[in-house]
Length: 394
Image (cartoon, rainbow, N blue to C red; front, side, top):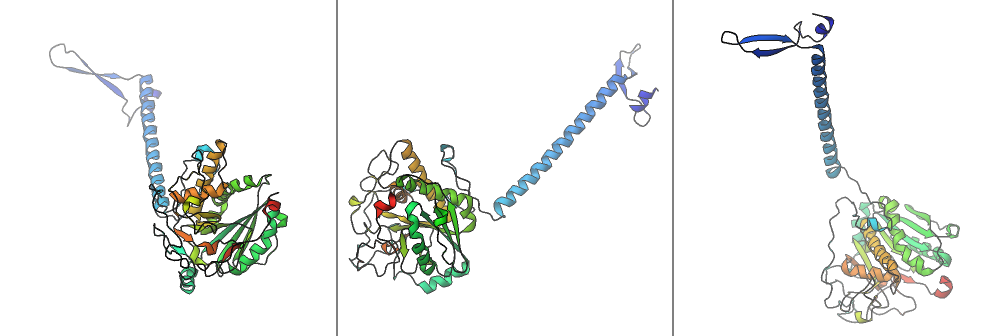
């Protein structure tokens, strides 16, 4: 046995190949033929390849098992909330919000039915429930002390966004001072001030657990452009930051002031406020967008209440979806060279028709100081300031 034969042998016995030959006198003669060195080397390489293939498949199976176990753990036991980054581009129009325990929301298919009337019972008594069973909040419909005992142990953080662009920065001082006095007193609050002039934001003393962040935004020449960009900015801010910092988010206009307590009675999944100019009129007179070519189009016979764009809010995940939906409608109109009658407010009303608010605030949460207080409103909580709109928008 040569050196190569020794290396390819097992237990001192060389590898051999048995062949059968024809017998000379009947029966079979078994002939043992030694394998050549090249054949033995080839067989050894084949065996090693099979060994490596089996080892690789085993490692892949182990890695797959570990990955599946981690996936099941993350999906079912790991608490997290994730809101994807949103940019206004067509590629992500179908992107869904990945939010823990979120349940799919189905838009209202049937949108034509008799109009609910806020003063249906009497001129001095407000409606308290919508046809879709959402409460209409007004003074006398809730117990503030009971709500305080219910909500304060939850350690909620409420966010508040306002846009102070151009000359509208002059309203910040009064807005913030009144908010510190009346808005969610006793709760953690985070103010988000969007402005093109951060130096103009006043230093207002804040209470314990209350914070203020200034977010610089781009300056625009036309006020219509500022208005249509608001929904985009809100949805992007929620995706980047606010979904980690607050539980509820309200989006308010800065040229207004708090006059009485605004508390947890306003918290809900998706919250709208009835416009003070149209709460007592037929929906035929609502300033909806009536052009069918617009994404904000509302047909005759559609609509419940006319909602003001100066106040909306809710759980941060629902506000994200709502603002994003409005912004997509604005983008669709812009692509078609259209601007809705009342910019973002038109798209807000269109969306509230198909995505009903879970709570509706009466006009005491959105009043116009130029109007006398009617008998149906026992007090005013949040109202506009008298201003020169032409000067502000110039």
